[in-house]
Image 1 (cartoon, rainbow, N blue to C red):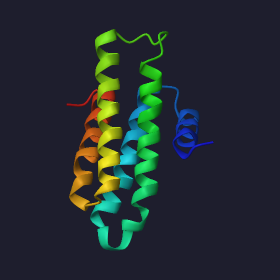
Image 2 (cartoon, rainbow, N blue to C red):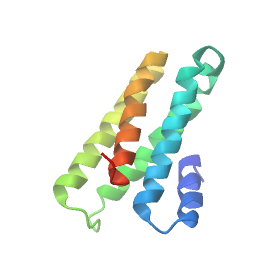
Image 3 (cartoon, helix red, strand yellow):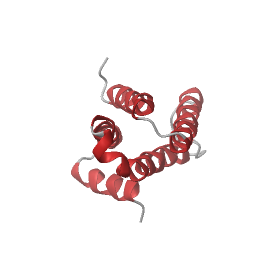
Length: 121
């Protein structure tokens, strides 16, 4: 089982609110990305694993929102899918040209989406 799916499952067991589960997963992924960014010289070797975890998490979100049975309104589903595709493409670009500052956009996206899921401004 993939790390992101395991994390999703473990977090889902802690709380019944799916929005909180998703927000927790995004914040965890953002924290891992931030740790690599902050300790770039020592943690650069963790970059691939951290990006893979984040990419898998977003792949799950894309899969969920593109499922025809998803109850979210179509425009929201489309926006989440588009954002997910951006995250995946950005991840591939970072892997091709790794730089600490490149992680900022992924960190910000994860944190902002998590804040939205938690109903925070």
